[in-house]
Image (cartoon, rainbow, N blue to C red):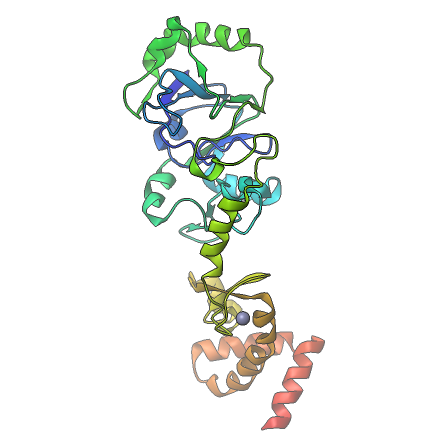
Length: 317
Ligand SMILES: [Zn+2]
């Protein structure tokens, strides 16, 4: 099967052609649900692209070589492809446009800081699957014209065509192989604004774009010390995760807020948190949650650090 669609925003996220594997994980839910390993996707440019009318020109071509659920993709990227997990503080643009934007260690999955926001979530997740390819050609801002006999592949809208492409499947494959292109190569860079000033050779080092992104981050403040965020940053659970006993955590779907802090601040408050929990748990023993926490404390009391705190609290009262 051959899928074709018009790509409106080619910003390096959908598809994400970086790190040797082209991935389609967000947007295009219908294609992600139905396309199978062995199918091909071709996306052509739009009339109003940032570089003018590129309708009828291929922006990328990929053969699907792996299909997995978005949840599996999250686990896969954590283990093998961490570069696909968006990292907004990176100096490398390719990190910013990571497409593994849903963290499935939460239920429902949580949106990572990325180019998408909560508004995109429902549609993204409705695609259910991630499509991967180590057999692709990416042209970006250097799109290539489809030959006349394949022009029927084009659709007029952003939607996709599949069934009607059946007779064009073999001619399409013939054309692709006649191009004599190198597989898994970026022949151009994404059209989106992120990559406007980027150099194809060292895709990623775009200081002006980076400054913008960094400003977005540095305008935030650390909730612990009230100063501007910078340097190493942690995401701290509020209220602290350790207020909840293991038994409670196992049985309740805890959804705690996360707030950014300086790594150093987070660390420096750790002892206060420990002291607080160890002092108050015994007083809260008449409640179910207090009892559960006390159970944890007793269980951990043999650890040297726990021992120290218990002694400290004991002598203080
Ligand atoms: Zn701080």
